[in-house]
Image (cartoon, rainbow, N blue to C red; front, top):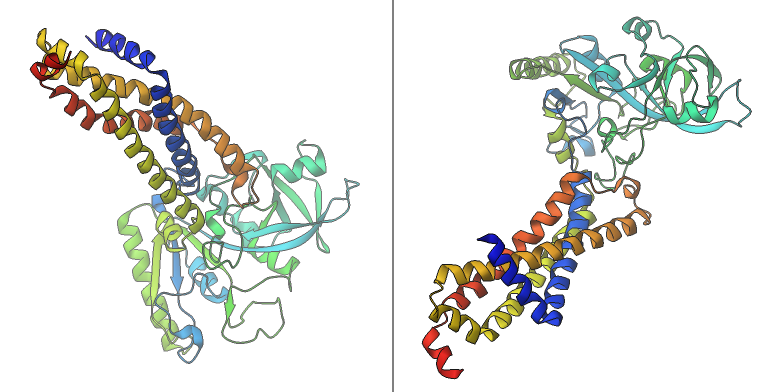
Length: 442
């Protein structure tokens, strides 16, 4: 039966090629615009660690004094002072925990003729790599003993390994960071979580401050305390409620500048960790170091949402594109209605020969679905063009934009769904045409 309706739909579409082309174009343009922006949102708002994110949490405590400007805020600041972060990390109350702080450092290799480079460095702890599922090409991460011993070791990115060592196994080679030599213990495989969730605090979603959450991960990773020693004086605070004794030297300063991530394997463990945080801040208040007792601990996706990581302009463009799709939908409704009603005589004859309301409705809806499928293919091509244009823009996430299989399927599915929706009212009107009135006019 579907084949019969399909053949009738093809004949009808060929009969008025101009009107068919207009409807296909309306669907294609609307789908192309909406799917371009939806694909961008799909990439920017995805889970950076599927299967892991529900067990990763971002603890926050509030070390700010009551008499400071920052002592009056709804939630604790997005980062911690180093003492609080290290205290919570040292307690080992989580399955895994990682301190994280970023800085820029001068890098060179004695084995390379390249001049020194200023690159991003993440100072973190050994759990960072297994907790976030970071893949290794060569070697491995350092050990917790290296954290405690302030070992002069480093893990480098695949990109830096390619630039300095031609992509070969560089484990055991020396890297010079600022004025200190470190030994390479691991080389990462290409790894780019989207967004770079572990350092989004103060990113472009948070009033334009801090690091870009859609940038590539840093090229150098060192043990947390090693990084503080090597790059002393080159760290930047998120904010301060007093002047650091030495600019860039932020240890024990009245500033927040360190992140802490913890992995908790169950809801019970998460609840216990929140209790642990509450007890910690009460102890610190009793010692006179804290005046605020607020705490907060969100999971990974909750934290990204709280930091408004998705750029507001991308969200606005998506809503505007879907508004444009709605306009295209209404235009298609009008064109289909005009097309079906112009065929009133033909439909009247079919009804007089015994065709049911349902048969006429099914034929018209099949025609609308076919228009949607053809428009969907056109919309897919326009989406590819739109994504190509996005990649040419100077946006932080332009190089990430691509269409995967899921979005391709959604493009075709949305086009057919939109066309069927647009064709429902015209098909109902056509199926109710009175055959006697139409036969009179023939």
